[in-house]
Length: 372
Ligand code: PMH
Image (spheres, rainbow, N blue to C red):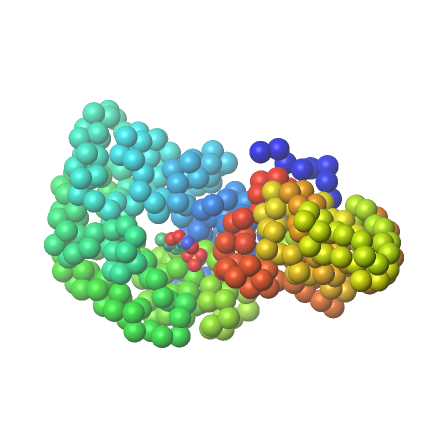
């Protein structure tokens, strides 16, 4: 997609905040426990490579992504250290996994059997690094039973072309007050571990929520995602155990300002009509940028004041009601601080009836990311 470099709308990413969030978590971890930065989905919209570099400064020693392509992007940008692909990679891409020295999640015996065959056909290659995924109740991917898991481990250990690097699970309710289901999943994972004769280098269970609210469960590596970006994994339910610093702000400028008299319509469908003389400003951001139509009625900040988004949000532009005349070029803050006020990603998520993870991932590539 074409990036709008010549438009004042931009995402500003505070890489120092990412570094600090990682550092604050690393300080809490037991000595032997490593932090892998989760930078899938373009670093939750923040930019995968700059996030990875900022995380390294804070003490991250490895990375997690969802796709093979995301892992290759990191390697091609010169990122060293382990990269674990959390999703299922088609077995036909084993040559790429080995070539780029990537660690892969394994969730089925068939995959392993096919992988053994494929690896036999490749000559003089490094062994493939395997993380066995156990589905303890997320219901997404992974081996379901102790028996299946043991069989998979045996096969990996038998193969000279595979290294058993990790075993892990993923909790679905670590961000909730009610811990019953978390405890059930945890118990299931512990049951698997006790059945295994030995353990691999990495035993990992923690997303951000687990790291924050169940630190006793750290294993020897954590997969740290949303909290690294400064966002509370639990939304409003649980308070973070230490301050998280949001890394992302979204800014633009007024590109057009006018005074309308009463009874003038704004936007497609004329869903807003001025009730008196009103100053209306236009901002160059719209739903094609991920600034979604449901944000109609939400506010943005201009000179420290909240201004309502009036009328439907268009593809590339939206209109706001200003408290007074402003000049074109005045700064507009859509997410972040402006004067004494702040709009958070959580506020946007609340308005959209979703989670901030989704808001962060929805900003399109059209908005340039500026790193500070
Ligand atoms: N590990 C796995 C397997 C994940 O899927 C995720 C996030 C993380 C770690 C990091 O979680 P955190 O950002 O809460 O720290 N995965 C997703 C997902 O699939 N949908 O939302 C978050």
